[in-house]
Image 1 (cartoon, rainbow, N blue to C red):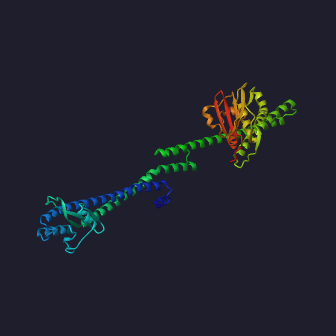
Image 2: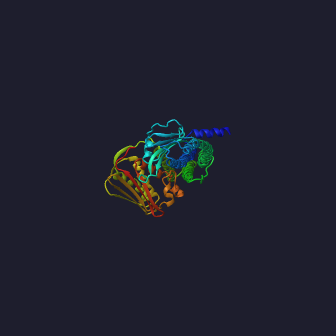
Amino acid sequence: MLQKVKELLKQFINFRSLRVRLFFIILIVGIVPSAIMRHSVLQSYEQRAVEQRTQVVQNQLRVLADHLVNDDYLSRPYSTVVNAELEMLSNLYDGRVLIINSNFKIAKDTYGLSEGKTIISEEVVKCFKGESLSNYDAEIGYIEMTTPIIDNRNSEHPSKIIGVMLTSISSDYISSTMEILNRKAFIMEVIMNLIIITLALVLSAVLSKPFGRVTKAINDVRAGYSTELLSVPDMAETIHIVDAFNELLAQRKALDDSRQEFVANVSHELKTPITSMKVLADSLLMQENVPAELYREFLEDIVSEIDRENQIITDLLALVKMDKTASQMNIASININDLTELILKRLRPIARKKDVEVVFESERTVIAEVDEVKMTLIMTNLVENAIKYNHDHGWVKVVLDADHQYFTFKVSDSGIGIPEEALPQIYERFYRVDKSHSREIGGTGLGLAITKNAVLMHRGSITVSSSEEEGSTFLVKIPLTYIAQ
C-alpha cells in the first residue's frame, strides 16, 4: 500500500505524466467556473439588494417630499408631524436625512449637527437640475441618495424643484446578509471543490488507464513475456497506438521468422556443399585406379560446390558491408553506358544457357557520379535475377535514360513474375518469394536487399511492377550528381 502511494506521488510530481495533466485540466475546468459563479452570484445579489433598498427608501422619500411641500416645511421647518416622519425614517434605516432649500442651506438635519449651514455638492446640484442620484459605498456601509422636493401647486411653474433631500441609510443589513451568504457559498464551494478533486482523481485515473495497459503490454512484449497482438479498444487514440504497435510487432515477427528460416537455409546451404565435397573426395580416396574421366567429373562437381558456397559467403559479406554506417562511398564520374555494356557482357553467357535474349537500349550517353562497385552490384543483381527467374527462350530488356537531374536504369523481363502480395516484402533481407525455386537456382534472399541498400546510399529510389507469369520491371532512379549526407 505504501509503495503504491509513493508511486502515485512520484507520478504527480512528474508533470509530464498524462494522468497528472488530466487531473489538473479537470481540476481547473471544475474549480475556476465554480469560483467565478460564486463571485458573480454574490455580486449580483448585492447589486439587486442595493437597488431594491434604494427603490423602497426613494418611494418613502417622495411621499415625505409631498408632505414637506404641503406643510411649507422649507419656510417653516417646525412641523411636528413632518419632523416625526423624518426621525422615524432616520431611525428605521439607521441613517441621516438633510433637507436643503433652494439657497443650498440645510433646513433640517436629523442628526441636528448641520442646520443652517450651506452645502454645495455635485449630487445636490444635479438633483436641483432634476437628476436623482444614488451611490453605494460597501466599505463604509452606507447608501447615499438625493430626492428632489417638487412644488406642483404653482400653475405658472409646475414641477418646480424647491429643495433637495440628501439621505444616507445604513447598508448593514445587506452586509450582514452578504456575510451569511458568503459563508454558505464558501462552504458549498469547498464541498464542490472536494467533489471536483475526487472526480479529477477518478477521471484522470480512468482516462489514463488504457495508456497504462498499452505500456504494460508493450513492456511485456519487449521483455519477452508475451508475443500476442495487443487489443486496447477503450479510446480511438489507444486503438491507433495499438494498431501501429501491432503492425510493428507483425513486421518484427515476420523478420524474426525470416531470419530463423534464413539461418536454417544458410546452415543447410553452407553444409550441403561441404558434405557433397566430402562425399566426392571420400569416393575418390576409397577407389583405386580411378579413371581420369571420373576423376575430372568429380573435380568439376567439387568446383561447382565451392562456387556455390563462395556465392553464399559473398552475399553475406556484401550485406554486412552495406550495414556499416561508416561505409565509405568511393564516388567517381563514370560512363554508365560503358559500365552497363561490361556487366551485360559478363552475364550473357548465363543467359545463353537458358536461351534468354538480353537487349540493351541506351537513349543517350550518361555520365554520373557513382560508386562503381556498388553501381555494379545494383545492375548485376537486377539483370542476373531477370535472367535466373526467366523462362527458357525468354528475354531481358535493359533501358538506360537520363534527364537533367537523374538517370534511370530499367530492367524488364518475360519471367515468372512476383505475386502482388509479395511485392512489399521483396526488399526484406532473407525473404524469398519461391523458396524451392530459389534454392534450385542458388538464391539466398539477399540480392534485392543488397540492391536497395546500394540504391539508397546513392540517394536514389527503386520501384517494381510485376504480374505472375508475365514478367517484372525494376526501375532504378539515381541522381547524376552525388549528394553527400
